[in-house]
Image 1 (tube, helix red, strand yellow):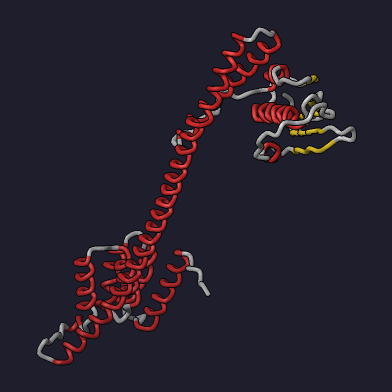
Image 2 (cartoon, rainbow, N blue to C red):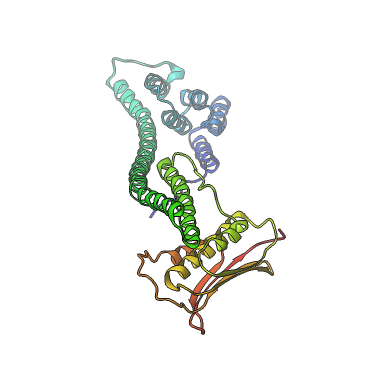
Length: 367
């Protein structure tokens, strides 16, 4: 069970109350000097957190002229918790010991008497108790601070280690992408360019030109992605150039399939919404080419009641699809992108034997 530390002001009030009670018990009201110094010592405890040495000095006269020592012991403890000057603490302990030896008013102080040494030992022990306790509290506070610093340093070191591992993995991935993917795509672009120049058929020339253009575009995007991976978290790097809805007409026209675009969107849509719409249409057309060759696709994009709706529908395939490798992450990525924008994504077969992809993204306020 953990106890809450009382507020500082409340603790000071409690100490002043006990100091006044100590004055009430040990000081006669007829002794005006002792009473005045006792009250001064008790009330000075309100300054102990801001002026601990001054507070202790204000409490010493009460110890000298009376038996009210509670305020002085509390001030001595506070001084021991705040200061690191051991010599000062030793001098304050000696001062309390000498002031607490009775009876100073009569100056009857005989070092030849055994009782005098016993009294000095008792008062010295009384002074040492708050000093050691205050130093113990100070050491505990320093230890807690040190442990907190060690914990923060360990967390920072763990973060740096994670970033180093991530940077290494990203650099390795960038090398693999550059050495393998870019090499293969470059070969495709070169061979498509040679075919475009040497083919006698116009249709073959057009197809080869499309392949070459797409290969060059893929190499450009791959170069930007390699730059991002090699940045390794040193600074935010934008995946440029980023597509928008204005590029949809070119995307649909160069998709290599029969596709109709029906788009009615206002200007000024947020850039993340435009990218999400573009990537959804791009992935849907790619799936039509891979899984439904020969099918006709329809792309319909509208904004209605503060929601942008994009639908890509294709009919039945007219040819047998070619077996192409697929990671099956395309639709998963689109669903995650839509969720990040507080939208919805769904896909599934149609009653006519085709396939449909649907995206809905909220757009707040007028654009």
